Amino acid sequence: MSFQPPSVFNIYDYFLGDRIREGMAERRALLTRDGETTYGALDRTAGRVALILREEGVRPGDRVIIALPDGPSYVAALFAVLRLGAVVVMVNPHIAAEQVRYFIEYTDARAVLADHEVADTFRAAARAVADEAGVGDTAHIVAVGDLLLRDSVDPHPPDIDVFPSHPDAPAIFLFSGGTTGRPKAVVQTHRSFANTTELYGKGILGMGPADVTLSVPKLYFGYATGSNLFFPFSVGATAALFPERCTAEALFDAIARFRPTVLVNVPTMVNHMLAHPGAARQDLSCLRLATSAGEALPEELHHRWIETFGVPLLDGLGTAEMWHIFISNHLDDVRPGTLGRPVPGFEVRVTDEDGRALPPGSVGQLRVRGDSLARGYWKRREDTLRAFRGAWYVSQDMISMDRAGYIRYHGRADDMLKVGGKWLAPAELENVLLAHDAVREVAVVGARDARGLVKPAAFVVLEDGVRADDALVAELQAWARDRLEPYKYPRTVTFLPELPRTHLGKVDRGGLAGRGDR
Image (cartoon, rainbow, N blue to C red; front, side, top):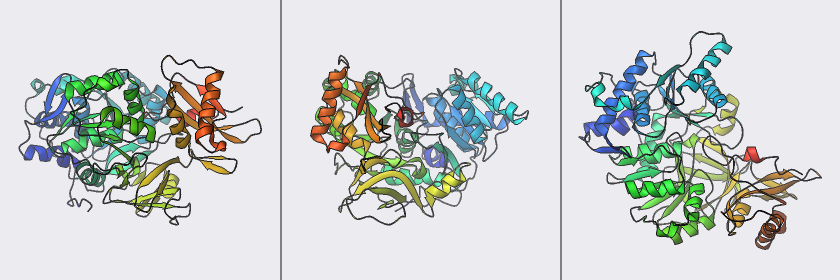
């Protein structure tokens, strides 16, 4: 069932080079507001960027940070790094200066491919890292712009062979999407990206050459790297890209412009799309399916999506450690409120903390194995030993599985709350509060009351025009008490203009922790 690569294998060929050899050089690879980019143009541009990197001293195995907005430059840069046998490190180009320094220092980056707007920030961070280490050399900062995409710069592709990588050699550093602490770099291999593409991209999504993909998350997020780049490229399909921050309005405009067949979505944007005043009038008839991942999708939102848009929505779960989705709903078997079943080729178990299998319906730790397993965390030996147990990845995600193999998500182990000696999954309370007409977004975390006991605290973003006052707090608390066991209602409700988010766009629960203490 799993993908079996040859002994020499570089995903540059699997996703791009093979399309050229198959006669697809003139086929449309990318769609942007500026027009189309072919597979051949990307191959030539990647060669030119690879030449620049080689001149900057980048060698096989070196880490190269990509800090670019979504567009042809990003895609060419990524493939240029792979072509050299170097390792791609994907970061949000708009992270704060102190985070820039962390990523450069932590990954020992040899070079950075940065957008002109942020290149100076990366240069300053690289100098600071070098000064503190007492060395003269720094990461080379290469500003990449649209100039590299013009064939007039050099109409002939440089003679740079694709490096003969091993299937298990590092290809890309993905960053763990945890909601607390410093991001850990997950060292993923060439094998993993091809394996999940075959099992999920082709097997579950049924990706084909006629597809056009469009993504809410940007390419630096591994979920989008797969669904909006690697999966379509593996079959000669087209990825639509736009660099702007995604809003419901921008997304509806992009759907109207590009007419995608696959929409790569996240629960937050599902919510925003449904809350848009013109939601019911949108033409989403081009879509054959949408996916949801990155965070828990409340069952309430799933039902509202189907009622409003009528497009199959495949909720699923993936991790950087197993690269991408390994549990998913299927097109012919969508069950709102569940993650679906394991993707064929992956084995999932529900266990206690000691690894013992739990009976159907029990909530426990997720363990998964398959041929997309990462090599571990970069420079994090203890974390690696805790999370990777032989062929298994032990996740902090809490799930349950029924007798038919359908899986429900119950939150992260470090997010679970013990209230009065009983467990509460924040997602359960969030789903109930989200069903209230006044609530647009909500996050539930643990807060300590005056006696030091942990109680649920809700942080709520209200719909436009809704007044935040004590009466609404009482109403939301009563709403939860009427629908859940008494101990699960929120002891505090705090109204925010927006929820804090991590570098990957997930709710920053660590940033909310303590704000509800009394």
